[in-house]
Length: 220
Image (cartoon, rainbow, N blue to C red; front, side, top):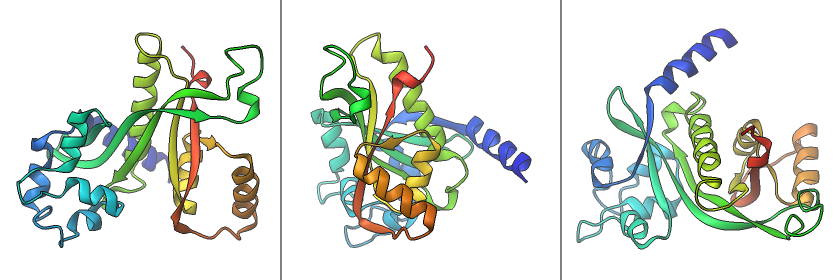
């Protein structure tokens, strides 16, 4: 029942830790035969990730990974969620600085609150090991991002929102809605909410849906 599921989620979260990605992050996955060749899509089969992300973590002929090069260049920061029990990465995500144009209700009042767009943190990629879906890993990561963002926004750079583009599948959208993300586009909200409610929603993995979380909704 829900009680045993809650206990399972609690046990799982106690084993998880977030670390910046480095070359050592990939060692346990390399042992499983991944990243051996761009023609081998083992990483995709493990994480059901996009081809773009698969390309970033594959070893080049020089032995480099583009993900690490992009991180060093300042394009984004990449993180891994590590299962401390076997020291293996079970999820990956990236964060970057961005701006977000938000619906009108978030822009009420005088300047600067009425700005059309706000500084935000963008989640570019978020992939969880397929065998560990629905175990609370994704929610653990989002809660970690929220906490880190809240801690930093008054200590260093100013930003208000956490922004992402959800793949247009019912599972992904319901997952982000469960974690208090809302639609950035009012038309998306009307159309998707209606089709989710009446059972006519159709998955389209080629499309994305902009969604965001408002850090002002968290208590300081």
